[in-house]
Length: 367
Image (cartoon, rainbow, N blue to C red; front, side):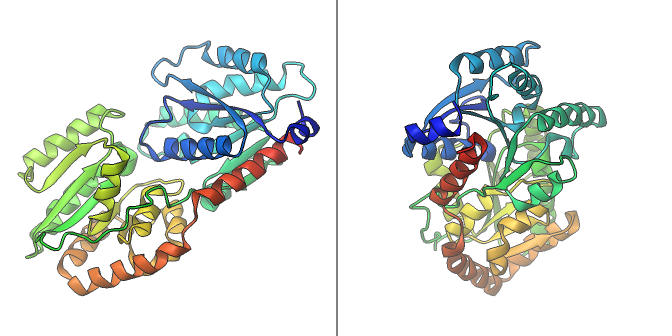
């Protein structure tokens, strides 16, 4: 094990720690899955340790460390969402007596302690475990410069690399929007969880629609099982507002359906309070679809090359205004769509992301 051995073999043996299956349709897991696949295509061997987020057994971190020490990989990548387990696993690996210790790389989309929608106690518990995990990481990879900048206040003397997500997952996503549709179609793509502020979007859409003579519709695409109580609130609100015929909650869909939903939308709407990057936003631009987004640091960075294709909302009323303005101004819709098509070529590619991530892992191995 070590840089010389990796250089001799020409490949890395990587342990990758993630919650659940890499087949999940969340932005964070999509990132993990694309990087893992790219590393394997580059000749590396990746052992994915899929943890059960519901179990959270007290000994899960010890069990994970035991498995990793038995396999003796060249490097461990831990998705920060597994911070409860990694807060135990990383210190065990650091103190296991192996020389040199197995390098530990933490992949950070954002910290859970940054999520304003969580209770104060939940944020405090997350902060304690996340700080411990950060302390025992040898290197950190973030998915945006915004996350790296914010992490600088959390950790010292750590290498922090930025590897942004690619936007070209849907190779055939670009298509013409339906010319026969009378309604302006707003689409949201993402897990139905409080951080994504889907309930805010539903209320903003309801109010904006009353201000518009133009017919409008809203399509919500994403898992309803991660926060079922919140998803239930969304469903009840749609019914109470009498908008069941204009707002569709589709749940999690296959990639092919997501690609069509994004490409056939008039605009993608992402009102999230926190995003490490915003994969759905750049995938929309790649498909030639404009974006209405909250002015959060990750989304601003992700959409920096597509300013003409983006309307930023600074609050709830601003979101409502953006929806109403987009729905009523056909010239604006056409201009933003043209800007999105032009900006598509400037977006990052997954092939570039894999090369950069692999370079960060080789550096962690000392190669």
